Length: 89
Image 1: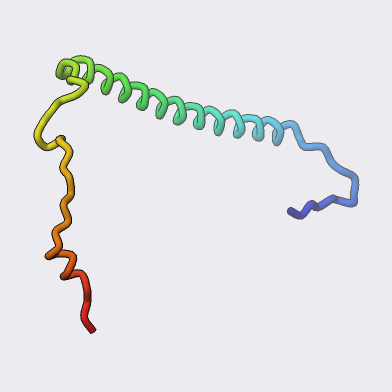
Image 2 (image 1 turned 30 degrees about the vertical axis):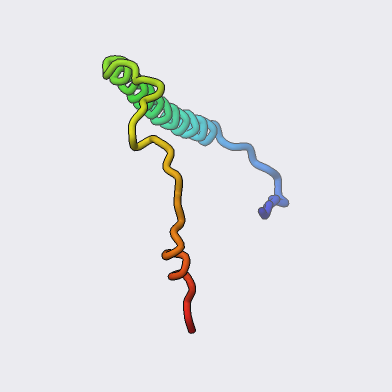
């Protein structure tokens, strides 16, 4: 970053310029706060809706359900498939 230093007498900023700068800073910060707070409120409402739907939804699900699809299957490798894996050139 380059810095430029004026060699002449430094003149102070006029009062009007200082007031305008302060007003711009306050306005930008207030807009930032408004939009950030709005997004926070939207996320908070979405979280509350999710909690309410889960609370009013179905009862508690069982911790463990035994079904045939969840039983352990053992893999058996047949010899016929193993012989087909070799590529003849």
